[in-house]
Amino acid sequence: MPTQTPIASSETRPSGPADPRPSGPADPRTSGPVADVHAGDQGDAPQLDVAQALLGLLGETATEPRPDPQLEALTLTVSADLPVLLWGEPGIGKTAALTQLATALDLPLTTVIASVHEPSDFSGLPVVGDDPAEQGIPMAPPDWAVRLVRAGRGLLFLDELSTAPPAVQAALLRLVLERRIGALQLPPGVRIVAAANPRSSAADGWELSPPLANRFVHLQWTHDHEVVVRGLGGTWPRATLPRLAPEKLPEAVDFARRAVCGLLAARPSLVHQLPSSETRRGGPWPSPRSWEMTLRLTAFATAAGVSRDVLSLLVRGTVGDGPGLEFLAGLDRMDLPDPEDLLADPAAATLPERGDLRQAVLDGVVAAVRARPDKSRWDAAWALLVNALESGPPDLVVVPATTLASLREPGWEVPASIERLAGAVSISRRADDVAARTRAATKARR
Image (cartoon, rainbow, N blue to C red; front, side):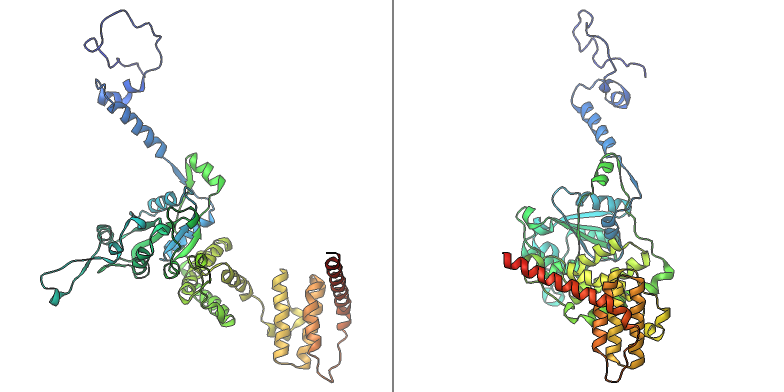
């Protein structure tokens, strides 16, 4: 590029000897489009424009497909039209992630800082009309809600939720659950996402009220070192909505209903468990509402074929860690063989390789014999235990074999196959005796 004439001229620069300073690269203020537009301007405007150009370059980033379980969990929750709350320390990138999500999904982003609003901003401001006795007093919504309704779609971002006082949290209940602000109903195309800092790191933070917390899917937002480094280099993970397979939709709904109903039928105490501590009440916990959200997320996850890690984040973020892990374990057992099928043909039975699943199958077979004791069924169960002994760890048959032996009725002959199990049971018992003596000796030394 040819060097352009310096901005200063003889009319603005005193005459004198030639400038003794050596010539160097062209000053960015005196070359390129900025100099062309602002030539002759000696104020700060050229430098501000150059600074703006630099900021523009810094803001130019790209995206790439990259496995990111927490981002997949976020996009699937948005796709399922459930309110989601991101928990994370300040500066972790929650706001940046939601901004990038809105851009990737081509949704207008509306940010509302909950802590700087009054309860009436969410419940609506009363407006007195011509005849209140006849027409009533409508509740006028805020301007941002009106803009969302006009757009028909968008991402409503409720930021700093944990700094909102209890009165504001109470006003948010209807917005989060019913999508209503005053007399205004948000359209179906609007998704609600919130972000919060833990109370220990929030500015004048509050614990979330249990009614508000139970309306959200809670996701713990953490940083991935590789994602941050690559993102600062100009390439961030791409946020995309999950691809749902149309042919899997009926199957996904049936699977989700069986999974949730099966667990709650076996564990009625999990239907509703309000935590005792204030901190845990402000997070995910099981209730009929949160189990309904779990059912919906399981159906979406099944139709989208997401990984178990993503489903784990979603389920534990809806009903809590304990119930969530029980639910995930129940999913594994849903595909286990029927005990009656195994008793009908124990020689052809194929047992799971995983130890916990194999143990569950054997326990189920023994429970089936206990429920309907019969000599042929009892013998078939022994044959199945021998099969398990020959194809897997012997310690897994100890408890089922001991329980099955206790079910023997008078007159039932002991099958010869029991002798093949006697060694494993005897060794296990001796090991238990040694462990018990070791514990007793350790206690005595203390």
